[in-house]
Image (cartoon, rainbow, N blue to C red):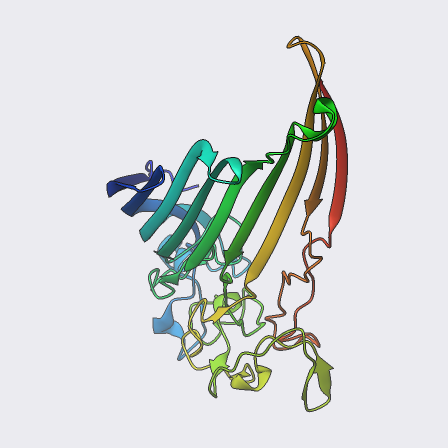
Amino acid sequence: MDPNLRTPYTYQYNLSIQHELPDNLVLQTAYVGTASHKLTALMDVNPFDPKTLGGTPHRIQNEVAGNTDKSFGFLEEFRNTSDASYNGLQISVTKPLSPTRFLGNTYFTLAYTYAHNIDNASGFRETSSTVPFFQPHIFRASSDIDLRHVFAFSGGWDLPFNRGPEKLVKGWSLYPIITYRTGYPLSVTADLSTSQSVPGPSGAGDASLVNANLVGPIQYFDPHLQQTFGAAKGLFLFNPKAFDNSSPTPPYGTAARNLLRGPHRANMDFALAKATPVYGERVNVEFRAEAFNIFNHTQFRSVGTNPDSTTFGQVTSAYDPRILQFGLHIKF
């Protein structure tokens, strides 16, 4: 832990405009921004001294302390060494619970966000939570949690059934939730390991931070369809031949951090509910049938980003298939 560690801070600013539309609709457009400073990340505070690479490499800590014991290795320290920014356009159309002609009572929110989240380290002990000692901002790029496009729709519909036995036909409601987002950023590492005796491509002894080289155009594929590259056959998201980690270009390879985008995700959840009074207004019973991923659509989760792995470039896991759930609530 850095003994001089300070509290990170964030500036938040936004401007929104609301406009009432016909049929009881409300349109809201907003700009939302944040600027974060002195965020925490890990840094090797005992790197190799590049000035000594012509002779016997040694680490800065040993040089400063006059210590000739080479058992000193890398020392990761928790430091204020990261900054971040977020800028987003948020648009929504909202209809509060109100009657709709021929349909009965309905309400919904339709929302879209176009945004960009940028930093030079994301989170603690995450994929990119460590920065180089001599160039702490060299990995500044889209954040690990950057989602460029997000669409969401949610609402409710009280079905206007009124013919037949009252306790049977009344009290039915539908609740859909539809979401879509683009993929999370991905980095292609060089799959090198940090060693206390090897300076690595950067000369600072931080080989585990090195990315592969970008040697060709990036091509994306539909992961639902099989592709073949040499002896590898599988559900590829991108062309693995675009990257090479055999000899990364100093200091940290030519493939920038978070250069790729993972699979997008589209999902629909759905609920059907029936509310029935059983003792005036004092006791009500609600039956709910809920479906998550109702269309059982394959939603890919992870992608292999290690060039030395047999699954490099391929999707390796998926979110849950369709899940059905039933519940009975007694309210009193």
